[in-house]
Image (cartoon, rainbow, N blue to C red; front, side):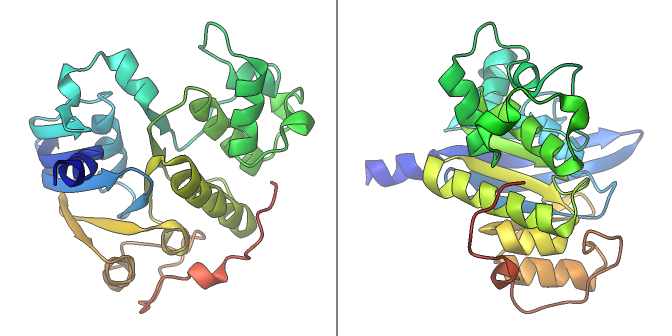
Length: 261
């Protein structure tokens, strides 16, 4: 019984979170969980508060009310630097520093072992030996997104927060990223919260789904949440085209083989 309760506490949990900006309540009594080893997708139109919510989860922003806990303990009691190592955030526009992929992945770390750096690149879906010394300026949009993911993975996070991870990707690169995230969750036990308005990607990668509606969180089965979001015009297909409702997530649209990209 105790082990079951401990397992339920593992991961990130938001309870009654509120956040206002400019007189508008962006987040209103938001409550949901991000379990370890699963991918939770957060869907809403642009400007609906997804980025604000992610930044509250690693204290780049502080909620006006409510609590956010990590493995049962309030994140407000954790050192911010330690929290951000445990809960890594990959932003919507991954920045690349001048220099090589190696320098970008190791940025901000006092020392990083070679096997850890190469392992982070491999885990992000890049062939480490091929990419590690490549100039970052020569990377494609999909490769830049994966290097940004590797930079976060090099810090050995327990949870990943991703803000519009397919924003700079074409459909094929988005499918490869979906497979990578599912593998990180299922094989590495990382809890993932991916905020997106790309419902095709959300359906391909999500184990659980949360929709933001007027600042409130609505949770449920992936298919039902995404269908409701499509009906309300809350999502797009990655090209700016609103999606029609559907009865099931398009996991079958993904090729079964893991690819590089």
